[in-house]
Amino acid sequence: MLVLLLTVLSLVCLYLGVMFLRRGLALTATATSYIRSAAQGYVVLEGEGSPLPGRSINAPFSGKPCLWWSTQVESLLGPVGNDQLAPNPDAFNKHFSTELFLFKDGTGECLVDPTEAEIHTRIQDVWYGNSCEVSSLHQARRSREPNDDFRFVEERIEPHERIVARGYFRTQENGSTKTNTLSQPPDGRRFLLSTVREDILARRLRLKALLALGCCVLLAACAVYAGGAA
Image 1 (spheres, one colour):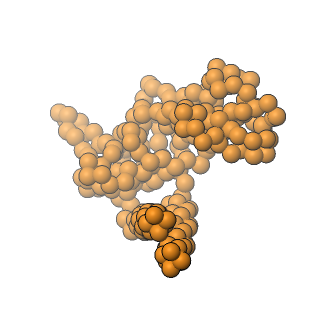
Image 2 (cartoon, helix red, strand yellow):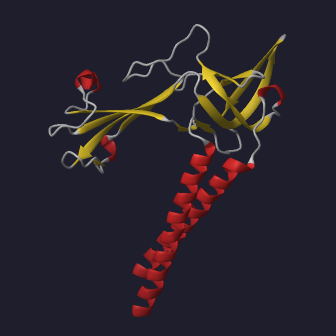
Image 3 (cartoon, one colour):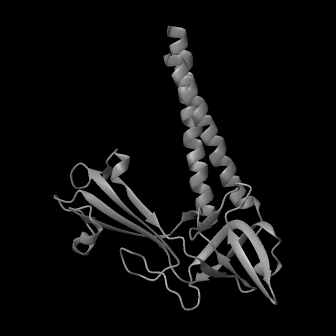
C-alpha cells in the first residue's frame, strides 16, 4: 500500500513539474501582438489599462481606485512572527472584481473582461486584526500584534500600470463601430493578466518545476526502497 501511495504521489509531482515547465516555456514562446493588427483568437498584448469612461472601480479594503482587485480574510495560527494559515478552508473569504476595463497599447484599445483570468499583481496590501469582520478593517494594523488572529489581504491592478495580457481577442462590429474585447479563451488555453514581468513569472514557474520534479525523484526512490524492503 505504501509503495502504491508513493508511486502515485511521484506521478502527481511529475505531472505538476511538466505542467509548470510548459507554462514557463509558453511565457517566452509567444510573440507580442499590437491591438491594431492583432489576429482574431489567442494573442499576447502589452500595454496599460484605465477605467471605462464615466465609471470607477475602487478596491473594498483600501478604497483606492483600480482596474481589478481581490480581497481575502485569512485565519492565522501561532504567535506573532508566525503567519502560518489555519488549515480550515472555511477560514478563507476571497472575493474579486469582474468589471470590464479599457486596455491600450498605443496602436488601439480593447475591453478586458477579467472573469476567470489568472492574475498576478505587483501590489499587495496587508492588514492585521482580532476580528474577521470586514467592518472592523478600519481598526486593523499593518503589523501583527499578540491578539491579532486574522489577516486582511488586498491585491490590485492600478490604472496605468504596465500589463501583459494573454487571452482571446475578438473584434465585433456594431454598425459603423468596431469593439475589441479580450477574455477567457474558449479552447481552455491560459487567460493571464499580469503586472509582474514575464521573465520573473517564467523564473518562478521554472523553480516550481524543479521542486516538483525533485519531489518526483525523491518519492520514486522512496517507492523503490519501500518495495525492496517489503
